[in-house]
Length: 108
Image 1 (cartoon, rainbow, N blue to C red):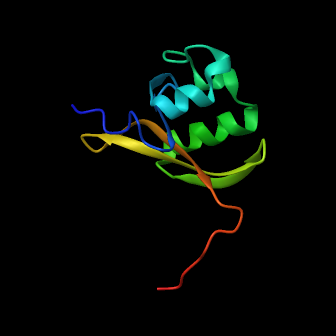
Image 2: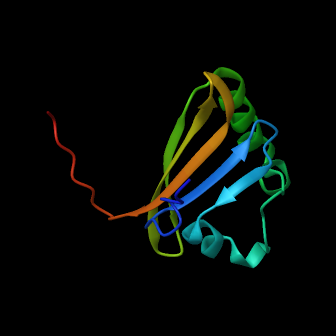
């Protein structure tokens, strides 16, 4: 399959139902370069217990999680959601994208 996310201008990280990292696009790899190659590593190793519980909840219940962060002078939107295979939760996808300080909002 074509790797459409490889050069996408946001970080894409994918894990399986155990929390083992399966895929990181170029932006994700650059973001976490200081931690070495994370493919095959488990998310539990790099998350606090509150975050790990949210990961487990998303995997168990199929819910999504979104929030913003401000780190190193950059504001980001984090969106985490399950991915499915044949209708069954197969893991999680996290999208992390830089957003402006003031983000327009439109009612439609």
